[in-house]
Length: 372
Figure 1 (tube, helix red, strand yellow):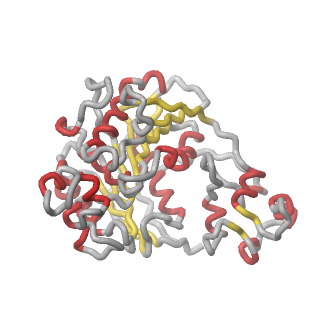
Figure 2: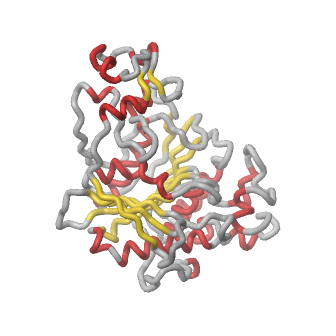
Figure 3: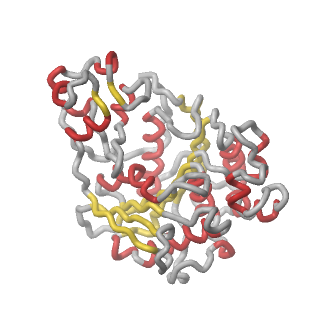
């Protein structure tokens, strides 16, 4: 696969033996084995098991060690059991709202290696249509970066729409970021290098965090650190909604204008009948030229959040001359992207912000499936 390199990067150190590099799982989730890019490339049928031709090229001795139940196949769990790397971070959970609501918590992953220099911080916001999901989903998204000892990682939880409607979700996210500002010295965070990203509903919230850093109206009154800012240095929206009122311009698996859609449940009524309140939930509404770099990554065959949502945000960002890029994943759906070049582009963006370098400003199309 050919890929345009847009910005300089610094490779993140990884320590793997030559024998295990073929199958090792990079960083696994707390509860489930999560295959590495190498495992995913071999797992052609995406069933979480390497079998038959997928095993070609792996040394027989290594297969024998991996295949613990001797069924002639290698599962992601078997690979994890043999090669699971030891985490090189500390995990702590805090309630940023000053109460006992488990939804208003964040997880902070800090490197075990101490340094005098404060580190950039990656903040993940989970998806789930604003009505499901939890902060543990972010661990696999940030763990590799924290293991590199070059980043602090944070995964934010927030109240779901069945508990509280908009703007509770952005109020929670901003309270979490204010908490990080207030505790920056404790966790060795460089608050000038906060980078937020999220998927689907989390992509929407990440984009809204980025575009409302100068918008006091959406700060809310959650938590005790109300004197702290909530702006960030950069953001990535992975297939996030950006203009609810135009989601039905393109076909989806359901009608977003319906009273029971995730968007309607978020704002407290059918989105078209309360259009003013709906616009108040759109990140596009708050754009100004002081906003940080924001890029969109979206599959052009997404049947849940239409690709036009990232197109609309990208066009609005360009109109305001905010550094941006639209990364279209050809034949990509609602996540589950298979091409490792996509993750590499994410790393490039993060490293550019962390190093104060120019970020990608040239859009491109990347195939969902690597040609390797």
